[in-house]
Length: 273
Image (cartoon, rainbow, N blue to C red; front, side):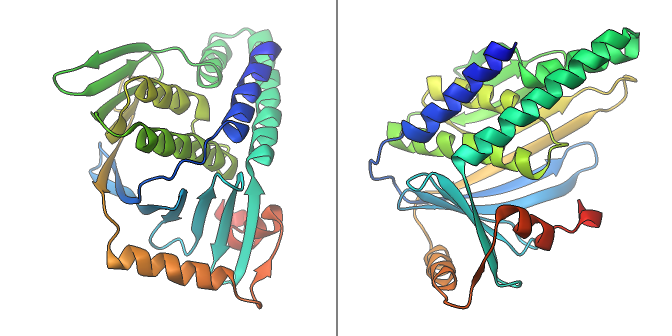
């Protein structure tokens, strides 16, 4: 199992150092996430892809996150707090590696206890860490299904795109998933979604919608989230103005640059996590 952790780290390092610098097309993705059982919208975001980078804006959060593969990092800033920080892809890999070690240790402890409950919990954690799916693709619907006992995905796909668009988007999606796992360790581990992205890569497609289901233990309604992605293939005046505004903010002399840990403590106090 330790060898498999090392292999995952090697894959991440290839993602860091193996990217090409081919000019990417500019486009914007508007995402809305619904908690299907309640019908509530639980997330909205705008992601602007421009000049090989991606600018993430979540309304109401007050932060902008910039994915910068050329610099092998994310830049995060808060205009309201006049704070900014960066975290490198290598640091994300290192944090994930340490988290994997902790999870492996926890799984081994659960298995040693040997009760039905602890064994079930250990099995689910192992799946998140090292997932295996039954993968199917409906070519008529352009629909990818990846099912398992624990988590299942149904993805409506957009096929027949330029290879560079698919490569750029899915590489962004991989790194963003790993970055978000660092922000919220209690969320689903990155590995299941990375396998979904890998399946999309094989088909040269990106997602138009992603449905995630996780059954409950008592047989009642479990987790069911659905994210819908609206793709705009040209930047609007609003998109371009936002990028100009954010770049000007980052260039300010009075902007305070701090460590990632300091930034997290400032914008996400302990009581808010």
